[in-house]
Image (cartoon, rainbow, N blue to C red; front, side, top):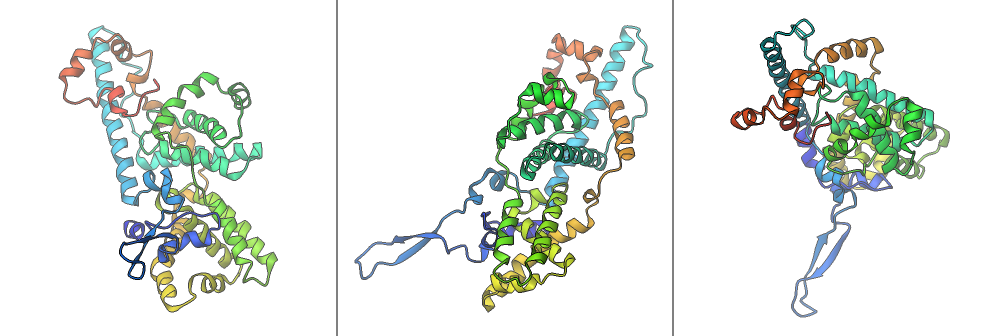
Length: 386
């Protein structure tokens, strides 16, 4: 269903005003350039060439939109690859120790590898920590949201079994402060968060590379403010509308922990949260919808057939997605314990496998081997922090 919705909103722009952005696909030819087709002045035919809206030109629109099935497939693929690789590397480490007559007692046995669901749960826990830290710093919500989105994008192509989410979290937070112009020196940053500066900087290039150096992130906060201003034209109760807006901002914060940022445009998420908040506060959202989107029969038909299903789909996610509820610390701790047992020996500087590969003694073997799954440098396609 998501893929179908994506095809219906593929040309919808993201604007500061919000209201026009969410429904631009119904009047996409409003903004354009009129070009003369040639011939005499009296016979000149005018052709309207639509101009791309600002959001349609963004890297977020062109590179970070997916259907839900695509997200599921990407995460499953990365998870399965790393589990297979760790199994092989553990066997290689065992063989090396056996050949040298060393003990195998400290090698894990019968591991319960993390599933995709386990990974998402652990990521959700650390995403909430990002929120709390930025709230302590009293920075704007969009700065916090940028850090969370960076982390979500990173773990689309990586796994927590390769890079611990706490380490990635700190790097994404430091990077977000820079890209959103709330600079903090690495010395002060590491001192406040009591983490070595080296570990934060070590992952920075890998994170940037995984993000494809796309640092600008569009969030629903600004479109939501646009809808708030726009709805004042038809409201008779400003105090209630203010409550609707505040409730919508809370819902946007919640939406940040789901996959909505990959599935829909910020203006659509903003409008959906205003619609949900209106229900919660007993505010007449339909009055605004009729005023803005249903000025005539054709516009009403487009609203009901295109935009409304999107708003309902977003509402369903916010009601049903388990990530909307904060992860219990005990659950996260249990998953983290299992994660520590799943450490890849190829990334452990104390392992024989790591030292052997560092010396380059397996370079010839890797060249002759058609399956590079056991080599972390080749398996992690965007780089390696080990």
